[in-house]
Structures are given as structure tokens and as C-alpha cells.
Length: 266
Length: 266
Image (tube, rainbow over all chains, first blue to last red; front, side, top):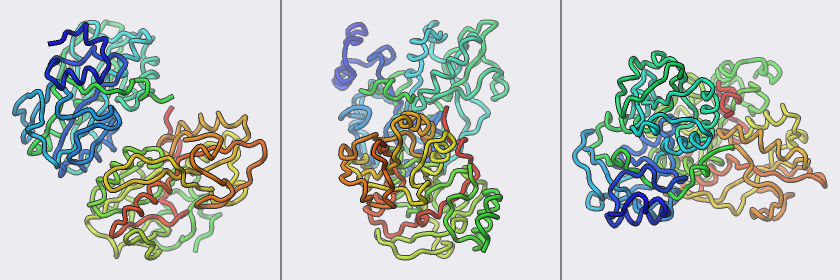
């Protein structure tokens, strides 16, 4: 198995080839710095229109980076001919909304009616925050980002509906506006905050008890800032209970050839 | 029939009700100033996924403002419960890609498998240009905007493919950057220019002979600036030859309750 230090010097394509050959099966944060990593959702065609419409209506939690036609497993936009069936280190298989297994490739499961969705991930804007010397607490504390289910309803689409899930990053008051400005540039990866300050206003009762991920330290003077989270579409899909749904395993993302900066607007 | 002067004081909702009752059957430019007007495309469900995917891949020519579930004819986002079957003054009916008639309402034609798409229109950013004292030539000359078929291919999606159609507005050199900045704010209505300067670079041989609309005066020192055009998705759909496709008639748009400024980013 390759080691992280060696991998950090490789291009996204070289890393994907190692993953394809089974030579890297660990999480992807820290790899191919500067390049966008993406969330994966694969659904049978009969659910694809509803999910595509759900993403169109809820671009902040569901920022689509690439959608492949039914049966297509080679990417076009995020990378030239990456194989979506083998180029991600770990996949979760869900049946009727319940986890049914975790695998390293999905070639055996592949069907001509699968539609692949790749969605933006907050890694991209966190890199931009760090470059501007804005602290990201869960990275400092080497934890997973804290995630909370809010009382903000997503706009429903057909069979797909549910509340928005958010991530939280505590910030010193004098960094809040700058953080909002920086993340606004990254509409393709969740974009600007959806809420700043009082968690109760969006239905979060206790910041110390996230619904997913880890709690992080919040200093007395700090303000919690909330961004829409890629856990939203996953929760919504599970609720719709499709016969089959394949996603990346959390932390085991698709590494693209597109720079974070290429996804930014002005 | 109501007259334009009287209508210019009415709200979008009041105007839509007049249209619904058959009391206004003229073009919509100049009505409900400040509010976004939208292009309409209605397709049978079997073409809807491809078209939605085409729009996702080509957001500049195909900026989706609202998509309705199959069979749904009341809007949610652009207006509260506007009836898409009657609230537009004129509809074009296409069969197998050929114009088969123009009607004032489509209630008799409606089917439960129709999917409605409403797309942004450059009227919205033209208003912003005029507010910043940037001249818009075809408005000055009371003409239709000149449109050209380029050699820039859109990203294909399933059965949908074709070249990008653009509009052109000639500008004095010292207004070009400002115009690019202003329209960049309006990503939901075609956004920033796709090309500035030499028309040959995008396959346009003669600016005096637009493919659609009217030629406009270009002064000697002026620079032609090109924006993606809503005629692109229409051309692409016609090429796919669906059994049936219903659009607004050119110039007879859907008038929304959403302000142009609400669609703008930063």
C-alpha cells in the first residue's frame, strides 16, 4: 500500500490509477491539494429525474459538478475518462435506504440504468479559507466537521424531500464577513453561509451534540457560522428508499482534475 | 384589449390575470419593469431528463429558473400559482421539430406527462446595463436583438446537442469591462459574456447578417460583445425532434414575481 507522504506529490490522475489498482484504500483528504474532491451518488434511472430536479432546486446543499447519462461510467468534465466504478477508494451500497455493505469497487454491481451524480464538497472552500488565514476548527482539532439537521426544509422534488443538513465552523467575530465573502465565490461547492449566529434560529438545540461528525471547541467570543452540507442529498435519497443507491464512503471521495480555483466565480 | 400605458402600472400578477382572461395578447417587453421574464419550454417526460441534463451542463445558454414536476402546471418559485397553460400571451406548438401553430392558451393540449421548464432571459441583465448608463443598441434602435449561431459546441446530453447561439451588443471600448462585470452578477440570466471582439473567432462571418433577429448599427470604434442566448435550447430541442414541444412565442414571455435584482449574485 502506498503512503500518504508519497501520494501527496502525485497528480490526481496518478492517484486515481493507484486507487483503481487497489493500492490506496484510505481516506482522500490531504491528497492532491488544490484539486476539487467530489461526493458520489449513483441511482437507478427511475429516480434520476427527481434527484436531478432536487439538486436544481437546492443548489446550496446539492451543488452538481457532473452528471453522467444512464449507464455511463467514464467522467468527462471533472476528469478525462476516470472510471466511476473503480477510481474511488470505498463505496457504500444502500438497499431500500439501508447500508448493505462497503466495497472497493462496483464493477460487478454496475447496471446500464445507473445514473451517476458527482457533487461539490466543502473541502474546496476550506482550502480557500485557510489560504486567507481563517481558522477551520475541526481541521485544527483533527476531527470530522460537525453536522446538524436543521428545521430549514429543502424545496421538495417528486419523491425527494427533507430538511437541510449544515456544517458549522466557529469563527472570531472579525473573520465572519471575510469567511462569507470567500465562500460566496465557491457556489459550486456549497457557497455562502446559510446562517450566521444563533443556532436555535435554524432549529439546532445543542452545538455540542452534532447529528453527524464530531463536536468541536467553540471559544466564548466566537460566532458559529453554518454552511449547507453534502450530507443533505444523501439523507434525502435514503428517505426516498430506492431499491439501490451507491455512494462514496464518507471521507473516501472522488479526486478530480479540476482545481478548486477553477470552480470559483469572480 | 388593455393598453401598454395602463399595464405598465400593474403588478406582474395583475398582468398575468389579464393575459389569462385574454385581455392582453401582445409582446411582454416593457411590462412589469424590474421583474424577471422567462422563456418557456414544455416537453413530454421522455425528453425531460436529457433536457434537464443539457441545461445543467450548459448553464450560460440554458439558465434554469424553475422546472415543474411532470403534469404540474402551477409555478412555485417564479410566481405563486401562475398557470403555465394560460398566463403567457402566445404559445408556439412544435411537432417533430416543426412549427405547427400559435395559440393563446394550451389547456386543451395539456397532458399529465408534460414537464415545464422556465429559463432566464437577457431582458434582466439589459435593465441592469441601462441603469449603469451602458447603451443597448437594439433597444435604442427599437429592434430585436441580433442573434448568431456560433462554432462553439454546447456540451451534449443524451439526445440533445448543437452549437451555442449568442446575442451581440456593440459597446464603446471604455464600457466593455463594466458590461462584463455587471452581467457577471446575473448568472441566472446568461451571466458574463462568452466572447469579446473578433466575431470570426467564434465562427461568425458577418455581423450584418444575424441568423435570427435584426442587424444593428455598429460604430467604427465599437467592440462587439457576445452573450449566450436562450435561442440555444430552443434550437437544440427542435433538432431532437420531440413528438411535441410547446414554447412561448418569441417576445411573448412569462412575467414572474421575482425581481431581476433578486436573481443577481454579489
